Image (cartoon, rainbow, N blue to C red; front, side, top):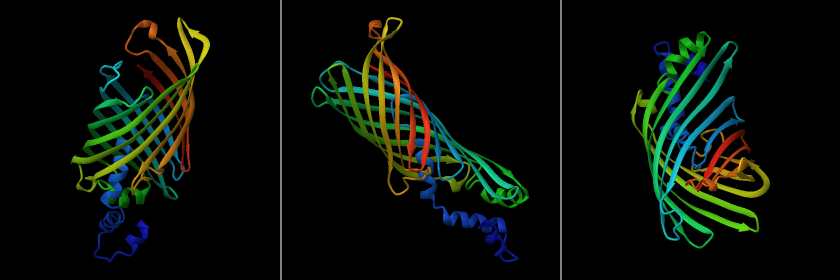
Amino acid sequence: MLLLLSAESSAQSNPVDEIRDAILESLSPEVLGAGYSAMVNFATSPDISAAIFYPDEDDSTLNVYKLPYRHVFNHDSKGWRPFVQALVSYQTLKAGFDLFADESISSEWTAYSGSLSGGVEVPINADLVFLTSFNMGLARLENRANYQGLIANELLKPALTGVIFDWEADAFLLGGSIGLDYRHSFSSLDFETRGSLTYNYIDTYDSSSEFVEFDSGVTTFDIEVSTVHPTNLSMGNFPLAIVTLLGNTTFLGPYSDSLGFNYFFEAGAALEADISSKEWKVKKIRLGATAIYGTDVTGWSIIFGYRY
């Protein structure tokens, strides 16, 4: 398409400008902003994790690494329990574009973000807790591209630099979330369901190019179901339990598939060690893995969790 556009240009027209104008017309700031915002907004679970996603529609790989810390005040109280949570995440999205023989572009988008949340847990009864929080943070997004071939370097590189590829942007994040946490014990089996709805508004305040300035809102729905089965095994003096995990993450809104998929499921298992004998604030730790699958994506993740 890009070659046809340049071929149809008049003799007085600059083909680089023609291609750039065509890209700007076909990709609105809302579309670009939704994709960048989805990267920043992607990780919402409070567990430490590393995940790899393989979208089916193209040759791309999304890596998500996140390190959260959560502290609940008055954790044993039956009344309202304030909490704070800090989250640091690092994400990369790699994609390759084969144009034709000996002509290609490989690119990598990188997102660094840090956020701080403050909220409250409100017990409804002995098993059900309502949660609400306010989130704020900062993010930096970068892109780098490598061009292979004469046409890619001489024609596409100057047209796409600062528009699609090779740019930097800094953004702030504001948002909030609401959720429910249900926990119940059936004999020796512990059952927990956690669901949340998160909205984050992301806006750039500095960028290397005016073409990558964006503001966009992203809504994410998460639900996770887990069961804990005690065993007769132990690690040292710490009893071990088997944890089963099921979950779903869904992006909502008009550009919900800006990452190449708009939902995915997770299923996996973990080992959980009861370290309450140490009388630390953290009572249990777990290590496990999940498989990721959906209509347009597959992948896997490693999870390190902790429970108070």
